[in-house]
Image (cartoon, rainbow, N blue to C red; front, side, top):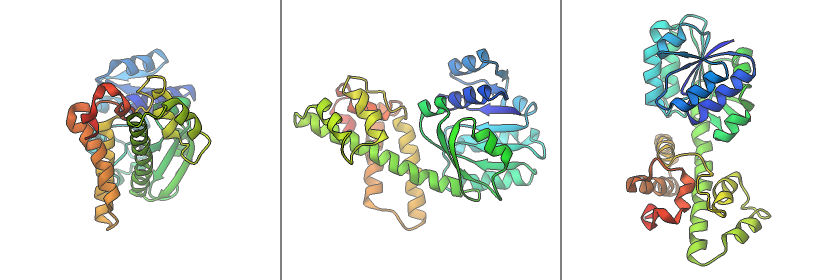
Length: 290
């Protein structure tokens, strides 16, 4: 297949590597960070000058951008060159209502829209073992499943367009809630003089064991605070999306607000671009957790 990738960043790069490895003709578009683009080109990808120029050359478009505003901006830009029968796969973490809006636009053009936000991080993207949380009208086509299977180990449809965003936000609430608890646990351990290495090793044998524990504390015990490659700003964005979803469906809670405050506070102190695992770095100072 001829596939166009818009958003070859931390996550998109790994997706692109796996689509190339699967034998697809991959087209990429210029990105503010040249390194992943240049790497994909060195592997055989073709670079286009703009999203619209790229879309004119492909049959499938894969989006991996920062959020709903960015996704809607891309859709607006490429709409004039989309052709009937094309497929758009959107791996963006969208706000509730975002996928329905995009789906409405593309349906009128006879273009199939599949929202497929993913579980996992940059490492899982590189390894091709992400999970796809799908929402689309009708059954997921073999064509769309084939593209997603390049970089996803598991592909699950939750319902029509919009269902994927809701499930993804719930999934992120679990992941970020676990991460926040790990961070706070090891902060308290440091304050109480509890040995990090021993605590981490013993936690591997208890119910506190988790991927979040490994990504955050696994490196931190050795002084590497960048093990969980998900930024604080992205955490605030996703939790804000989830807060809005919970409020609109009368299921908000104090825990939702408290979790959002953990990352919002860190962002307000200038740490938004840092990885969430860096909140354990003593160099950040105590204000990052205030």
